[in-house]
Image (tube, rainbow, N blue to C red; front, side):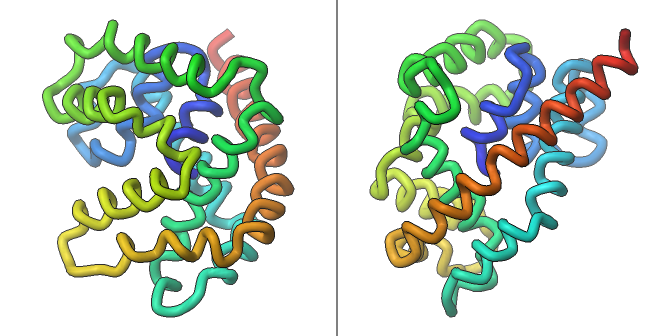
Length: 199
């Protein structure tokens, strides 16, 4: 899953949300500088990624991706699934997407001053350019993939792969809606287990 789903599956707590987002930006020993709440977000992000990566429905979606993009199938499916979450948002959340994302950005803004530069600037760019809202459109998906492509050190085709979403739209959408309720149930179980340990 990509940022929208990770945030949606997070606690409402700002630190947990921030940890879920910046987990991809902060690695190794650098994580030790963050609060326990943000570190819980790191852990949640990892658990969701592991669950997603081994799920048979996700494997089915990855198999739909065609050459020469198969090597990016995991990344593409993560982003495409966030598109379907955004497009069909009202199936999963009573708060409209624009209102929900505005609330998340406001939470981040109130916390920016407590973050290291890299994490702060990343979240500021996310809010300024409305990365979360951009999952709704195919143009937004293309922009996301091009941004991800630029971050990779080697030349790659990731930025040219957005058409794979259109090519397999109905099948990928069905896969997502079969998978996401299972992921929600898993995330709730992880949260309940964590709450039991800290009670």
